[in-house]
Length: 158
Image (cartoon, rainbow, N blue to C red; front, side, top):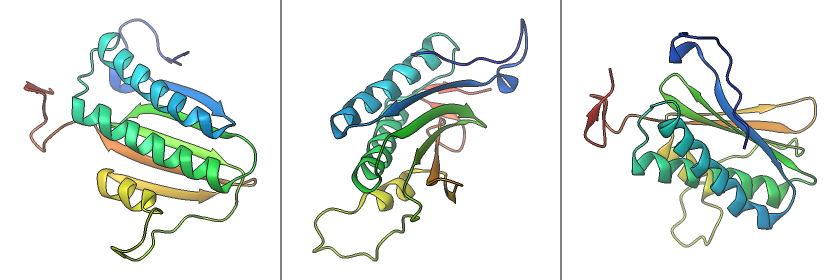
């Protein structure tokens, strides 16, 4: 995993870009996408000192799994996953070649499956879907802080 860092010396963390990207081509690679998210968040905490709670770790892996699964299921060809620390959140962006934009379906307790977008919408601060010249890009942001006061696993964010 390569992380892209922009900035020099003592530049503030808020001004740095901490990100990782990967392409996935097979449905068996969905687990690899989750592993990439776990590894990235572990590095964010260990290398960059940003606290990452178990809740954030789980939520980001869930969002990655759902978005990559949808891309692999509904779009031909590879999908691209990017994880980036931005504005107090982890942004999960997935590009795929299918131009049809996803929509959340109406609640139906009898429906089996097809709840992925609903789950992503429920756990994320924001979700954006954009049509691209080829395909679409879905970006969802999972907040790093566990509560509005900034308490993350017993530590305050300052």
